[in-house]
Image (cartoon, rainbow, N blue to C red; front, side):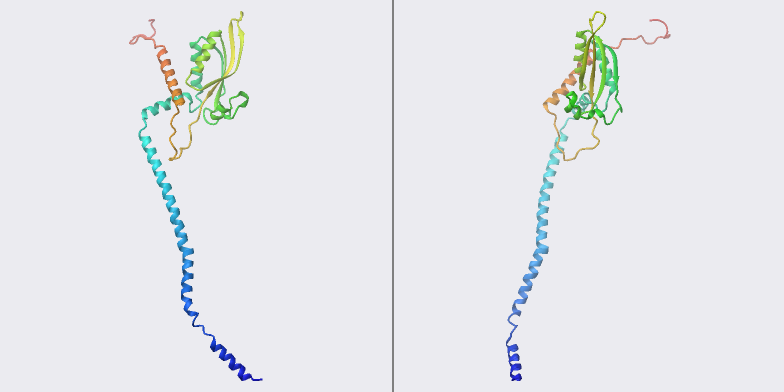
Length: 262
């Protein structure tokens, strides 16, 4: 065995491996690696943030333009006209049940048309707040109206002749408040059967005011032509009622003794 010659060959091979030519690529490879890390961890996130900020700025700009247009529209509205429309809408659909007002209107219509009110029954429950009648009533065919607004049922029993009763119903439907008539039952009354006895229910609708304000960015809902015509009809009915109202009789004043006959 020639051991010295074998060891000498290993030394000769080790001397032949030259790593100096690979060290020239180390610095560029490290720089490329660092650049890739910076690109992934820093540049790309910042670029996506810049894009999102650009989209957000565009949305804010459009919202600001919409608010500016809404402000210009609000500044151009007629305050007096709005107050009148609110008053007329309150008459058509009160914000509370207004039971006493509805009963007074019905009694006035009955007295003007020669109809005798034999019974007026009202079960209003709470004077304000939720109403169980607000649920849909499909049995009476008024599901859409009862779902939109709650109502108060006023049970009426009347006695009159046929023409007076028709005039009374016309007066009830001509009232500014939104009313409905159901369960109408008519029968003959009186000894000769010349009078008319009617039992029915008047539905007086009402709508509570909203408890929360709407969004500032919500669009302004203008009245439709049908809604404007309805408000005009209510205003016309009010003017005709006030013109036909009886004047207060003149009473002597300045009397020394209030108990002496006139």
